[in-house]
Length: 136
Image (cartoon, rainbow, N blue to C red; front, side):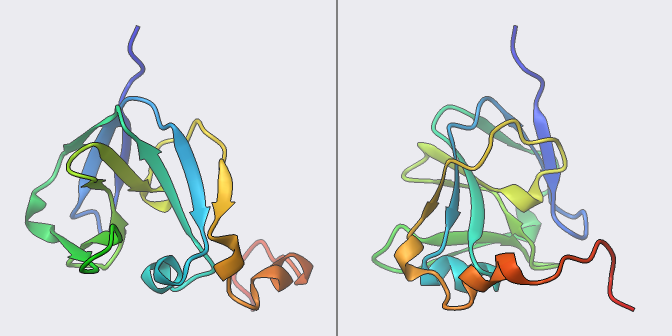
């Protein structure tokens, strides 16, 4: 029996998608390019070589930026800038930003990758206070 499709969207809702199939890996990448992509400590991406990506909304709101001579690319919504899935490596790998998923993710992170490239402040995050809501 096939699992139901998992869904996701961008922040403004212009881009909506479904993923049918299984994620094989969930990497937290600390490389400089991924930090620039996200503006954060790392990019959290799901990978599958067997899943199918089905766009529910128009592809007109999606752009992809590729760094020439590399495999690094980022697809995003042109209206709100949110990261959205892409199909990479000549169509053989579906890459889904974990934060774009609206459905539960049924895989735990597999590894921190490019960890030696992490931001100098990244390790300090575990020691700072945690607040459940926006500060006053």
